[in-house]
Image 1 (spheres, one colour):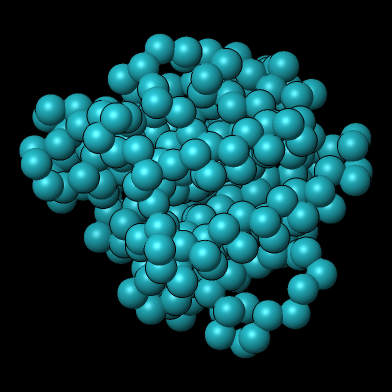
Image 2: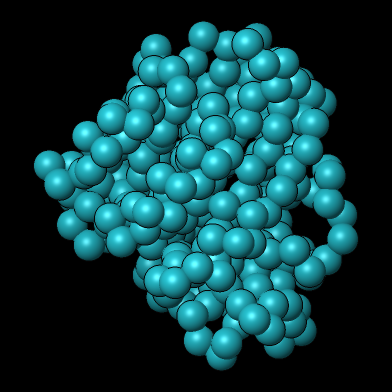
Amino acid sequence: MSNEFMLATFNANSLRARMNIVMDWLRDNQPDVLCIQETKVQDHDFPLEVFHEAGWHVVYRGMKSYNGVALISREAPVETAFGLQDGSTPDTATIVEEEARVITARFPDLVVVNTYIPQGYETDSPKYEWKIRFLERLRVHMEHLMENRGTPVVWCGDFNIAPEDRDVYDPDGLRGHVCFNPQLSAIFQEFLNMGFVDVFRKHCPEAGEYTFWDYRMNAFKRNLGWRIDHILALKQLAERSAGVFVDRAPRALPSPSDHTFLAARFLR
């Protein structure tokens, strides 16, 4: 067994449209866990056999055309839950969407949370209000997981939050955006105050590294990017982080996602 394990996250923006990209990346990088967001596929259409034939375990929950999360791993988790466990009782439609946005998977020595946080549309819209409520409930979900302090927790996914000026290509021009504003920065800091560490920033303090580039404006070639995909780990695990990287190469392939892979290595 290697003395390191790798965890990665990727917003596929339609898994079936990016299957070659995902399978090639798994083959070439051999992560222990890959969390995928925005699979955009109903459960009965999920390409499960492709992963199984390649030797991967998969858990997933999806919807038609929107949202959807999957967790691909070398070993099967011992327990899996979908949605937010925060004690609330949302309506059925909300439960369906939340389950297609959050996977919590327990492994023998690790808890992995994969999230696709709502984008929010516009800051003065009900969708943004729901984004803030979702983040509030997510905090309670994390507090419940942290009650068992002996188990390391790593939380990753598309947060739709650029926390700081160095996380966007034009902070002055973009400030106030639905994914980049003081309210979201404060919420992100609250998660750090709970004991999570931004693993990317632990290793890469410089500006100009991003995980998302819009399809428009020739954004990728011009590096007009955003860092909105994250890997956060509780301090006890973050202290064992050995490195992190953004793999820009898949974003340059034909028919790419508008995001790319973010990965972190941890000492066992």
